[in-house]
Image 1 (cartoon, rainbow, N blue to C red):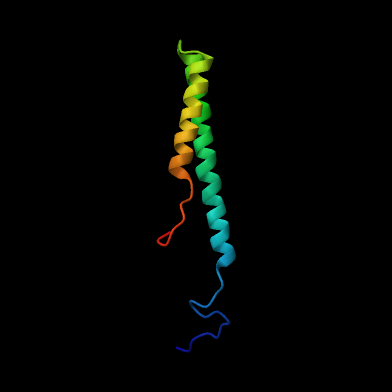
Image 2 (image 1 turned 135 degrees about the vertical axis):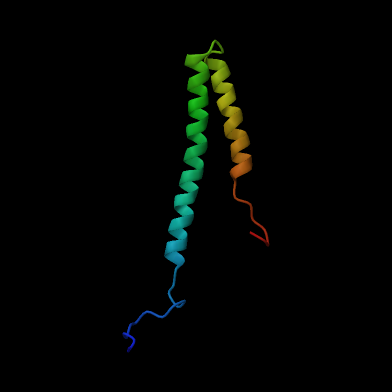
Length: 79
């Protein structure tokens, strides 16, 4: 059976745009998840417990700070 001719050659396509789009989607997902978790924590503590507004706000700030430290992009030779 004869092979069909094609302009596509496996492994020769430039994928920089696809890789950049993937990195952007992953970054948006990562950071929006962090802020969603912090917001849900603040609202839960504020409205569903006796802790109140300040406890919810402080805990949300702590989660954002710790999450930012954990999720930030690290550079280096292996990354």
